[in-house]
Length: 339
Image (cartoon, rainbow, N blue to C red; front, side, top):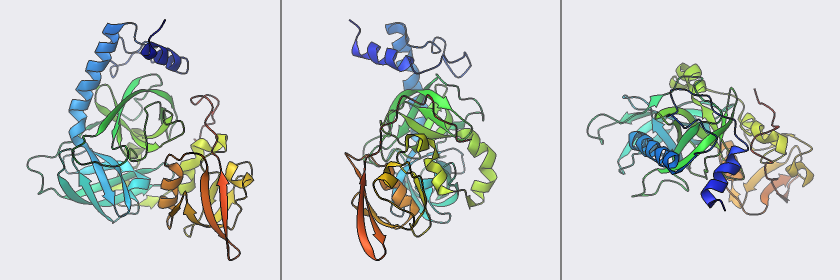
């Protein structure tokens, strides 16, 4: 009888292609599953080495009402995160290092179409010595099937708890997203994704159901838009962030304007079938008042038991819309690209 660990690895292998040999993968790690205890120990050792190298630069972020994770990528204090975490450019940000040191900064640019964001640390006086930072991988170095390590602050930053590590595999990749089976939850958004050489290959973005099928912004998009982000530019369509799950008629299926009025809705989505309609103004999502697109997205993406609940204003009256988000089928097979 196979052990639970072996059974899990075999099950995962059924959905993963074989990674081609490349320098970012230690010898033997391109196998579909570890062959024996020695392979598992080697994988464990490689993971520990990566975490030791990159954890000091993995940070907690607080921007207004938003909180999430991020990673320092330069000696002068550039932090990469998700766009829905950094929010609008020019805001004050608090950056918390793993040892609890708090630094101040400001939000720079964001691309809502792919959920990328950037922050600049502006006051490094509270930290003695040079800032820790990680190395960015080359633009197109991610390969389906390779082992990866995701870090972040699940449930939000917690004092005296180091950034949490999750090991997984790349399930699929496209030009504007990378999908892995690293188990993430709310609070991990904006955290870093590394290959086993300790190079940054992505930023945690969309957390799915089940939590072991998640989407990351690939590092290539940061390379391509670095100047725009650093200059504080904000662009892209926020509703595109939900495009990846559109085939499942799931987490969104609708678009809203800046006042949270529904401007477009997929009639096949669960929300539409439950009664949500164009023109409805969303007031609350899953029991919480929402006033911005970011707040709405965070509420819809946060893990919820049972039904999603929206309270909307329609022709001067309040209506409650309840619907269930269908679980994704499989791990990326058959999904359409959002390129």
